[in-house]
Length: 305
Image 1 (cartoon, rainbow, N blue to C red):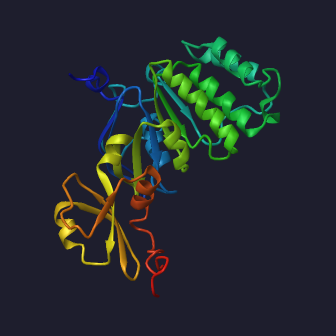
Image 2: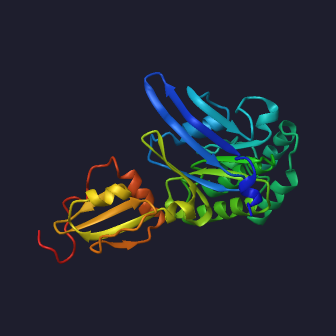
């Protein structure tokens, strides 16, 4: 039986999406799909195109090529579309001299489905003062104010551009807990950009991995992990492995090879020992494809130089 959530049209769908800024290519042939109700972790190195992708999805930038659909239509700067979208940039856009209560009042004038009570309830539960200028609050408190105001729009899609990058571990945990509660209440899909794999493991069930302006992976995290394995064995030619699998990354010592592979077929050669792959190992494997081979000169413990 088909899961109703899987049968619903994707909240986000792009095909061959590209974005260029003069001579700089920010996105190249990006194809992604994000089902409804997911928390999708958007991860990649600086300059990979994460912010550009979020801006295109929010209707703040026009694609140079390809197709993009958000909530069944083209992203655009009109009230009907913007009412369905929440976008929170890394710099936490708040008026520093105004209080949270002032921001709540402003939001009520700008948003047709504004839920002021939810902001007050959430911030009171976190012991964040409503009458204090937000510029005097801690970074974690300001992030919670911004998230609560964004959720008060009752958006169907929430786009978050590294909102926890500057927060301490406790503030990050509290922010992500608030986000998880909002998604659990239903009707919300999230794309969360972050450099922190541990945060993504804690909250996300879907992954978009960008590197070199291209999509490397997109799918439910459990499915993506199941498609990959780590092989450890004696240092040898990998041609046989590459006939049946995609070799994502290989690292070698004098006697040993460690391979990250993608593919469901069996590994026949008994010299290779296979193991499941974790999310951090998977992400670093893909991001390390174009990086200098820092491990190439390392030697395993007990091996000769």
